[in-house]
Image (cartoon, rainbow, N blue to C red; front, side, top):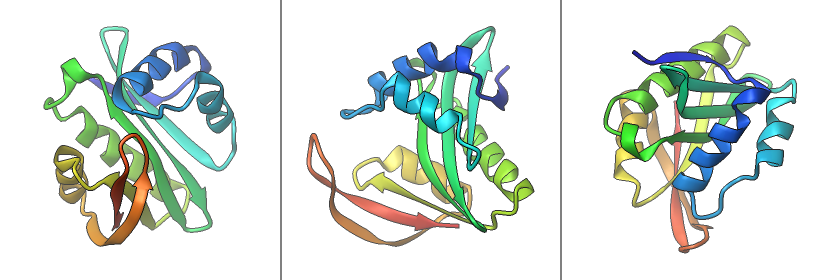
Length: 143
């Protein structure tokens, strides 16, 4: 069973490994720590039998939250871990007064887009050439 909880500094080695596994331009452990320690962010992990299998985070600005990271270990994808993380992140954001949520996702990342649509996000536009390595458009989504 997967438990979703607040991220702690001691989770960062595992989180950084998931970040490297998931993204062509991963955040460093230090970048993750900086965002974890900010007062205007929420970072969560999905833990299963003592192992971090996924994480997510957002930056809250007033009543809006920008979802910055969502990643799940390759071997745990397709098990609804991402869905649970996003749902809990939205719940925690609402507790802090956010009622609008936004994110960008690679146009080709159909699995992630599906997770976000299940969570109630809709496509609002496209950011041309937003991503690098490889260059790709981002789909802008809002809930």
